[in-house]
Length: 402
Image (cartoon, rainbow, N blue to C red; front, side, top):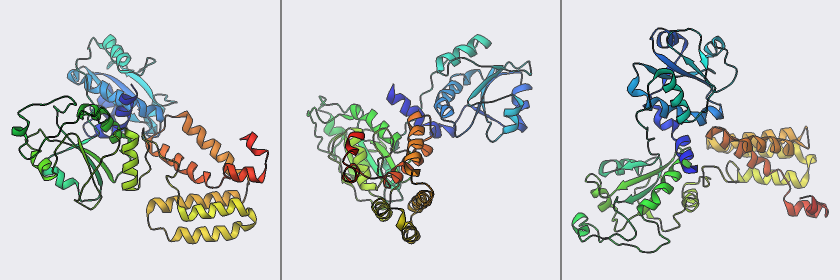
């Protein structure tokens, strides 16, 4: 269930390009909903709404499931944050709000049922007599590469981690026909129970791809070496066993074989080391994400020297910030400066703000970008706190409080 939730939440953007959900705006709302004569379920949402994000893949699945009856029922949505007039027109006060238009009356019925596929589809079936006919399968977050696309993907602006696999690859499998299928490779089979076969690796690889989806310069990919259009790519890379995992650094076509653990946490740690990212299992960020070493030194000085040196530290921080070329580091530097400014007004700022942000993260329901933003801010705030050893040295009684 956990993996399915990750897959669905991580793939909303991937399916948007071929969405079956109708987008409504003031200029087409009446035409689509009131004048079409079709029953329509409309979701009023906001892009920043965590609950809306959770509903999005289910709603997408619902639309695909009823696409065969598009002449009778429609699944649609309104960005009520952008189209406030429509939200106001129908009395929308929270997100997401689902309203049912029967195609006859101008007055909709508010949907009060469950937000799962079964509840939604049962509601529509009860209202229209149309039943869910097909189950939508979300697209994979893993990019499939072949003879043509492998060389287009590597050596460019992304770090690429590729799993070379075969559909028949199993720990106890062997066929005399293998040398005929793969004349380029001396197929090696492993019976090591600690090394997963291709099928065992597949869900981990999917979860890894979802976890790194927010990273624009990292690609998690796969090559099916049994496919006619991919055998040359496997031969080119000298693949002699399955699964074989290779890492291609950004800007290089030279690959390195990955021989580490096959758990998501192991793979994530490897990518972080190679690509300079900070992802952890499940898609979150580690406690170093967003921090800048030179500014960490200044934060540590504030902790040890106090507010008396604040003006000097701010000047030094501005100097360091001006030397940062990367956009992400420059953004982080701005937050370091903001924290120093706030500390000049309130010595309790770091503790209070940390508690507030931690509470937002714990509550959940956040978009990936917002979650990452809060975590990086928490990481930076943490640089302005005394460590346990420092605090204990300053006050011997602090250990019990901690």
